Length: 138
Image (cartoon, rainbow, N blue to C red; front, side, top):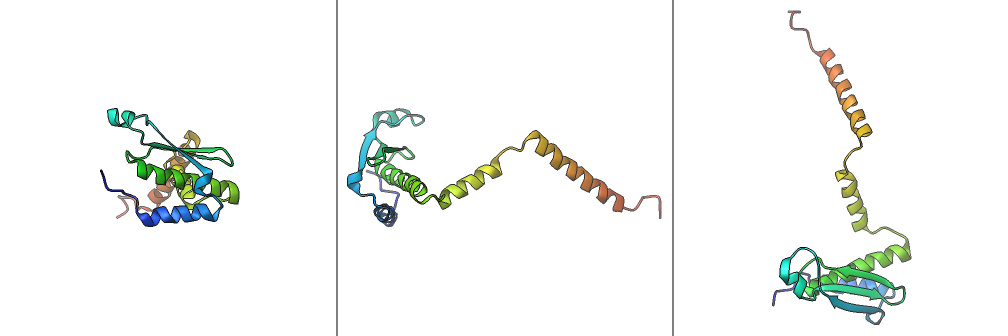
């Protein structure tokens, strides 16, 4: 059996945060289902995908990040925690903010924005060109 990649400290931290917002293990229904997608036969034959249901609200979270069931249990709880904190406390978690920031940085510019940026660059280049001395003025 492979070694667990998530530390026990992280697991206890997530469990502590869940308890802090009032979620106990009795409130969670945990199911293990067969995965889907990339990964070949192994992912399709084993029940490594974790489905967590928060019974009080009916919120369902599925996680299939890794082939390890234990790791997926941790990641599913962390995702559930983030969603519950966002719903209860009305704040975006730091991870969601970071994810949004990266998404906006990678987002492709619209044609209008790209044309405007290129026009500004051309304008700056023209200004710099005016500063140069002409070659025949020696």
